[in-house]
Image (cartoon, rainbow, N blue to C red; front, side):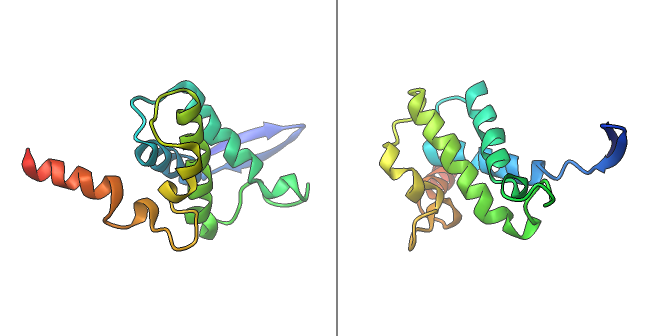
Length: 128
């Protein structure tokens, strides 16, 4: 935790944003099979979280969404990161397949199950 001063007042920053940004960033990287991570992908994750802030709808609301929503929000952030990877040519994933890859479409397990990239990575480790 750290103490922050803003407009004459102070508050304690817990840096809970990491609970949203990093899982979403990692899922977006893995789901898109990005060849590398760009600065734009990292900024996209941060901007996606900013757009999900309850303050966007109510200036008196909490800056960050409830932590109970972290799983769903991480998938939204992951989709934004994966789209950025596709846009930069760092992924061969088709833009229309992003939501399914990160588990946002109904019936899709995305990266949360043992299928897809995670299953392939485990198979590669066993062969090595």
